Amino acid sequence: MPQGTPIRLVQENGNLIELEAQTMVMTTSRKVGGSPVPFTGSKRMGFDLNVNSAMINVQGVITDDTVGGANTAAVAKINFGKTQNTGLQWNTATNRAEIEFHTGAYYSYLNLTDAADTTRTIYIISGGSTAYVAGQDKVQILSSDANLHTTLPVAIRDCINARFSSYFTATVESATQYDGTTAATQLKIVQDTAGRSGNDSTPAWIGSQRMTRPHMESFGGGATGTKKSAGDKVMDLYGILNNSITQAGRTVMALGTIAGGVGIAAATSWTGVGAFAGAGIALGGVGMLLDKEEDEELDYIVGIQIPYNSLVTSEDGVQYSARNFFMPTGYEKGLDKTSVNNLLPASVDFDMKDKFTGIQGAVQKMDITYNAGEMVYEFNMIFAPIDGLI
View 1 (cartoon, rainbow, N blue to C red):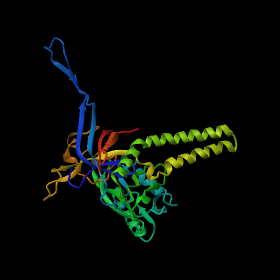
View 2 (cartoon, rainbow, N blue to C red):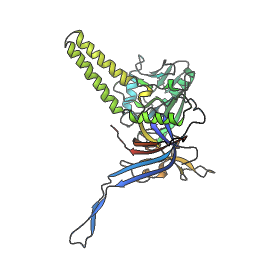
View 3 (cartoon, rainbow, N blue to C red):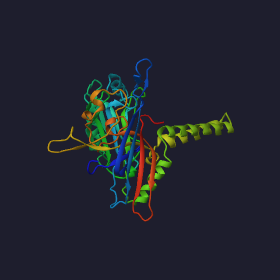
View 4 (cartoon, one colour):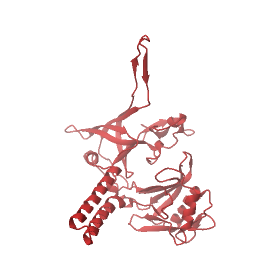
């Protein structure tokens, strides 16, 4: 591994679990085989439908911390280069018109919740250009701005740093757009107060339901540093792997809560107050499970970042630069499956929609071994690369 860059398991909330790996094996099995054909002198023919299985085996040790970890601040991102759910182009004439149409009464606005659980609001209004409105919690946009995907993050950045600098720090950075190209379309917002209190479900864009939202990542990754023993770390891993729920699993639980609420309503009365009371219980349960996503609930391990030394992207005077291994599944072509286009540093934040940030999947098996009298634990982990997990 590149010096100073460990293998990291990535949780859904953005937290990283660093592994002291000693060996790592990446295995790929192609489902291909040959069969002899009669009357050909036993020539063998076969099919290769590009159906493959892959596993990653990591072995290492778990040791005591020598120093307490530092507090880390929660980070949120808004990428105006693509949409939230479909990954299509966000900066379209339709979206710009919808935003401007609903700005007269401040119908469009952006909510950010700080570490003290106070919501800060940036209002979106129409204007002669896309820019921060000096001295106000407002950003104006021009509906004909064909460069809104790059001008709007700058405007919001300026507003945050001018009006809410006691709570957040905002920067604009390059990110992958809907078409695979990179541009300065991403707004990165960091909580000024480090620690777990900064993790929450914002940013939230409030506005026209006909407008597609830009790609947003909620505040996550905030952690309160603690010093842990090897046993503490093993217990953390053991607890997470024995009981953590995927996003789809949480949705099923929410639907079960709805069904339970409706059942209570039916048992009481299908008319009058009884039915509405049941519905109220159901909706309250959904809100508890989905609307207020506490950091602790999003502990499922969704990916792994495995660094390697690259000469392809090394800078002048530097022998190597660290990059993450990635899994080139899907309709990839040519260099998109190789190291040549892997330009992001190994320290990049994991993004399930960007293959170059790491490998999606789940921990399939974890064996942890302890020998009496030893100060360390040994582990043998099997990670299964999976693009879509239910």
